[in-house]
Amino acid sequence: MALDAGVRCRCIEEGKAKPHPFPQLLVIDPVEGPILKPSATEAQWEQHFEWLGDPKICKHGGWIVGDFLGNVVLAENVRNALRMMEEKTDDIFPVLLDEVVVNGVHTGDAVEAIDAKRVLDEVERAEKLLPRYAPDASPAMKDFFKKMRRLAEASIATGNPIQF
Ligand SMILES: [Zn+2]
Image 1: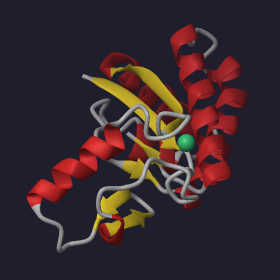
Image 2: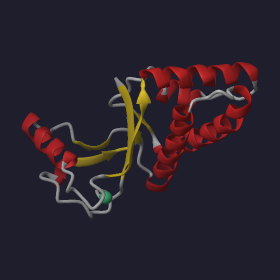
Image 3: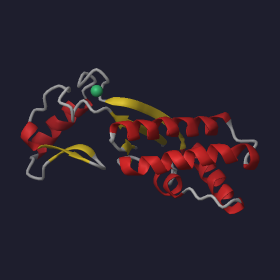
């Protein structure tokens, strides 16, 4: 299992995406992104997912950032490093620990755009503490924080959630 994450572009909200098959049913949820109203049928949901997953939905293919963050082992290592830094310093990493590296098998969850600023703040503090408290941190772990920074910045810029 792996941890993937992405942030959608704003083309759907801005009317620049391929037309939706049922525009009257489409709503943008702050957590789940583009979804259908409760009255939608199963067949309409199927067409919705086809539309949403179409790489030609807009010039970005629907996503401005999409990253493979790492496997379950990396998630475990990041979790251990963050917990260790929480124990040894006054810093805490609640969003990263409770919403990102929970178990390395995140699918269908999201960090809302209003929390992206906190993610960015936690990433910046973790990157500052790493050299001192985890000098043997792997390149993959450093890469993980770089990718989380990019995702958080994209979420802040678009107002869309970081989806896992
Ligand atoms: Zn787009």
